[in-house]
Length: 297
Image 1 (cartoon, rainbow, N blue to C red):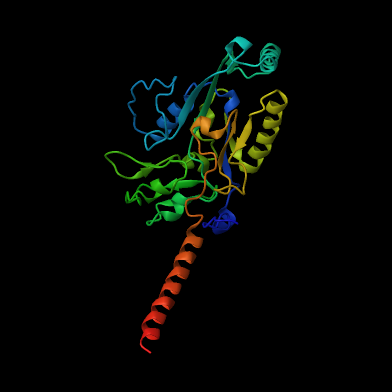
Image 2 (cartoon, helix red, strand yellow):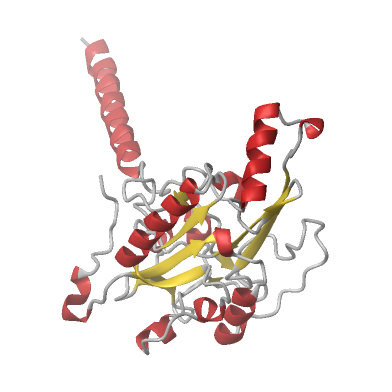
């Protein structure tokens, strides 16, 4: 069942463009944060002073009004030999993978660094857009979701509606801010600043259908190379948000990266909730009527 409420691309007619998006291949992310810097510079996102968090090299910890890109660092200690807790079979398999070069560059010597550049997902079923009372959020001709700051009244409904905790209100400003997928650049047929700045092509921009095909091919490569936990995230059009315009190839489960494993459009059950409430109200009315008029006989 689809919950997309904004008619795209039909609402744009001949002006509609192929849906654009991001494919983030985390297996080649080097954690350089060039995407974060490029995003801030191009979009004039204010500096966000952060203290040392102690979480590896992660100094932003999450997305927010002043962090439209967030590079996560996850350090995992993996047992290489039996003395470190691995079984003999695990030790043999792990040793063969490392010696044979089957692991990604992020693995070695019993330590794995998982790095991923997170961003707004530009959901197909975007709850933030649909709960906005002023129309400040809209879906562009490229299928992306953008906030118009000159229309935003700072109510915060979109903040609580987002299942990913992406959108946020800026301190001292009060309005909601998030990634626009560089809408101004898209209109000039340029790729977003973050994708252009990425030195390893971890962040890939383009037509969503093409990116999904590319992601399936890359996933097969990694799984054949021994990355059994590799998986695609937010590519399923039947998931809780109808798929997303920004999706990821992960080397571990989503929750390891701080992502919800099964995100759901927060409006998904509203219809059934209101229907149940209406039925309950009718039943209550019937019961009260029977009690009043039945008791008067």
